[in-house]
Structure formats: structure tokens, C-alpha cells
Image (cartoon, rainbow, N blue to C red):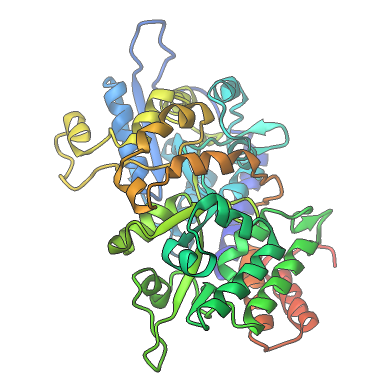
Length: 465
């Protein structure tokens, strides 16, 4: 709550400064747009919260050796990154970055505010590579594209093949998807997992792990005409979770907890020493390599992927150009050379940008700095071109001989995130608290919903009640 209020105050400060001073985009600083065949020059200042941006800055430096690329990074703990960026934008002047990276949790706050330059001139390039529409939608507002991303993060359902064989007699993804094709069949199949395994296996660790799935399938956003709206899909989330809790279909293991990770390694036991197995995890594309595979390498071959009951997306990083950038044209070249460049996207996904590649550009880079492959890119054209190259890779064998890129590509076109708003991150906390209150029997549904409304009034002041 404190983090959001600090961020809101900084947003308001910047809006007032912007209104008084104009958009601040007074020119191209040191850079001039080169004629055909000439090199780009000037200084490009990139700010980020992720070291992926540093690797992209190095790659861009290799593409444009005459450009002076300056990179700065601040972590996201306690809202430090957002505060850092907003303070610089409000102050203006030479310290304003040219490119800022924006995480999924706060990208909409920047896109919907008066912070970022209009990038509609780059939209034809995004259409040419068939950037997934939901990626464009997240970075767009009021008819303007204000941020682009090199990655798409469709959410899927990862499941254990061994439990599937035990319960359903098959681990084939096409057959298992039929058992989890919608919410009703998912409940039926969750009961089957409980019954066949005599309560030793659970459908999911905790209903909260599926939150992004319900959020992505609302008819209405949280705020409509300055009023809080609780979409029926969010009530369905609580009803769905109530069944999981009451019927013993979940094991009350929250995402990112020690037991959650232990379950992936088959090392989760109850107080009596009985193993408690979890059948499914709901995670986006990066969850495969960065969560499951890295945490439980010995479980290779016992995983598979299906779209699951509802399409959704989770996570991701966008890049935008502040209106007060000193070098907006050079910043556009950075976006063209990375996010909108099929060669970059292909190389990024296939792991071409390894340590040797990066050190050839900058020999001072430590040997541990590298960019591994597997990231699912935002271009349907590139995803289609490179999908076959994931056959036979370690991640292919990890999911039992299934091509994860093909599954992700099937899920991505059906995701719709137009309902996401800049205040979603602030509202998400009270919603999770109220959901816990209800599911753990600490209040009725109405009491829990009122608890939610009361807390939203505190974190999003100014709504009509």
C-alpha cells in the first residue's frame, strides 16, 4: 500500500510538471538521423530493472559501434525502480533516460499516464512481424502504441506425466487437455486425481496460483467510469477455489513458497512423513526454464504442457521512450534493432547471444554474463520460423518429448488483455488478501468482498463510491 501511494504521488507530480512544461521532447540531443549507409552516432541512455536489458544494450552496441550506449539498472524492491524513473522524468533535463524498461506489474501505469512517446510510426514494423495483439494492447492507450516487448508470455498448465498415467491412463497432452478443457471438467478431473491416488496427489498447490487466468478472462476491468467493478469471473474464481479447499483438491501451498518448489522435486511431505504430490502448476512461458527446469532438473521427462481451461498471460517486459528523451530517434533505432527485428528475436530465442558473443563486443563483460535460449518471442512470424529448432533440445526432453514452443505459439493468439489498467497492481494486493480471508474461512463472501472494497478505497483514492 505504501509503495503504491508513493508511486501515485510521483505520478501526480510528473503529470503536473508535464502539464506546465509540455511534453519535453525538444529534439534529438547529440544524435542526427543518418542518411542511408551512414552510421548512427550519439549517446543512448537505457534504464532498466532487469539484466536482460544490459545484454540487449551490449548487442545494440555491437550493431552500432559509433553509438555510446550507457546502461543503468535499479532493482524493483519496494518500488525503487519506478520511483527512480518517475523522479527523473519529473525533474527533466539531461538525466532523463532515452529508453525505459517496464515490467508487467506497472507497465500499464506508465502507458496510461503522460509519460511515454507515441510509437505509432513503428507499428507497421510490428504488424510486419505479426507481433501478438495482446502484447501490442498492453503497450497501447488512447489509440497510441507507447511500449513494445520482445517477448510474449502466454500462460499454460504444466503437469506431471507420472500422475497423469496413474490417474487417467495416459500422459498424452491432447488427451489430458480434454480433461481440463474448461472449469467444470477441471473440477471433475481434480476430484479424480484425489480419488484415484487416495488423497496423496492434489490438482494444484493453491487456487491463488490460477489468479492470472481469471483476471485475463473478465468482461470488465476493475475500474469503469471511476467506479470499482467486481466482474463475475472474479467471483467465479472464489467459487472455484471454495470447491478446491472444501473437497481437498489443493494442498494450501502458495506460489514461491519452499514447499511449492519442493513439490516439483518430489520432496514435499506432510507432518506425518507422507509425500504430497502436486499434479499441475499454472505458469507462463518463462516458468518452464526459469522455475520448473532450473529448480527440479532431476524431474526431466516427467512434465508436459497443455493450454488448460482458460487462456491467460503472466509477466513480461516492455520498453518505451520517455516524452522527455534527449535522443528519441536513436531510442527508436534501439527498438527497431531489437524488439522489431526478426534476426534479433530469432537469435535471442535460440541462445545465439551467449557469453562469447557478448564478450566479442565488450571484453570487459564477466564470463558468467550470457543470454540462454528459450524465451518465447512476441513475433508470430519468428515463432513459426524457429519452432522446429527446439526439437531435441534439453527443454524438449524435459517435457517428455514435447515441443514447448509449439504449445506456446498455439496459446498466444487467443489471449486478450485489453482490460488491464494502471491500477491493477494496487488492486491485486487487496484482492489476494480478501480471497485468502474467504477461502480460509475467516469471513463470509460478502464480508471478504467488503474487506476488499475498504482496502481499495485506501490504495486507489478518488473513486466514486
